[in-house]
Length: 124
Image (tube, rainbow, N blue to C red):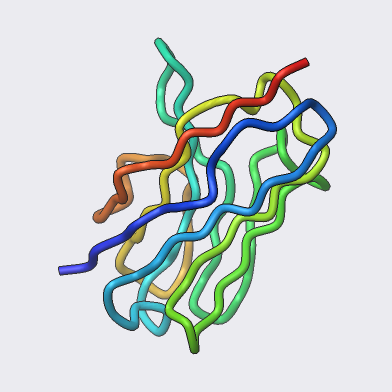
């Protein structure tokens, strides 16, 4: 069983930055695709970024050039660096894990394990 715990959310003004962290209960990076998702009130959960075990990344168009996903294998931690934040980035952010050596999709249904989420609010 993989356990995921997010942290680092908070409130920030538009144009600011936040770094989210996701502590992973056991070493998963050799055989799991890791991802970040967000969900605003009344909306579906959407994929933000994914990273494969060998470090290949993929991003939603809405965050390309602003967000960076990374992982620290020594610390068993996944990160999401969010720069140039916009009010529309406000949402609950979740990290997730999917079995496999690739990340074929940003669709939430494909991911097997989820954290409880951390909230991000961006004010204008």
